Amino acid sequence: MGRPPGFDKDEVVQAVERQFRRTGYAGTSVDDIAKAARLGRGSLYAAFGDKSKLYLRTLQAYCDRNEADWAAVLEGPDGTALDRLYAYLVRSTRFVHDDPDQLGCMVTGFIIEGVDHDPQASARVRLALERIEGLLTECVQAAQRHGDLDPEADAREISQLLMAINRGMEVMAKAGLDAAALGHVADRAFDGLPLTARARSQQAPQPATADAS
Image (tube, rainbow, N blue to C red; front, side, top):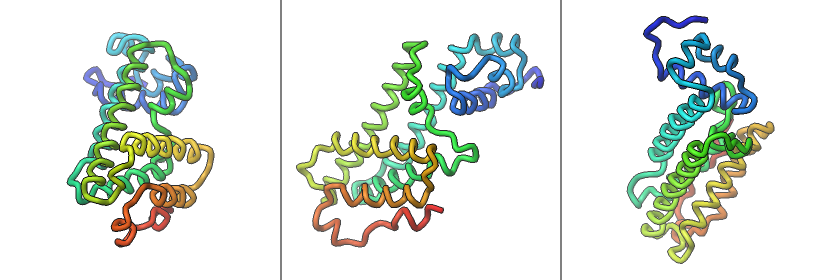
């Protein structure tokens, strides 16, 4: 098992994060964590503290990375905002299937499991959801400014709808729905947005079903 004395803490955190995503907080024992980290219990506690502290550290690292990834998808000029919203949906169809272990989002796992061992973890999850909603809302507003979405539509409601679709597709993927079927969901969800007549008359984005395999 043992790692060398100068082990990389970031690598350990990533390995333990995947263990928590695989088996959840309650379903992950300290022995599971030690095995994933390739560290003895003593080294694990000395470097990271107890299970709760390590969970919080992995959750924080996951949220930071996830928020940065979504920002890379959703931030940009007004002229491509509608395409970025579609890219959000397409990426949502592939999130689970593109992972070799088909792990889902750690934030979703936290919510479904109902983990309440640490108010700091709950607060970090709320902040993650607020930040993703903010990114989506800004992208929707950009599409409205460009004339691609109805300017009278509530941008925050649209962002919340897209987030709900994202989480739902993750759950359905973990339940066995294949990427092609999820691609059809993304296409229908996009068609259901309050697109302006101009946006509908232009060439539609490449269907998600075309590259979901």
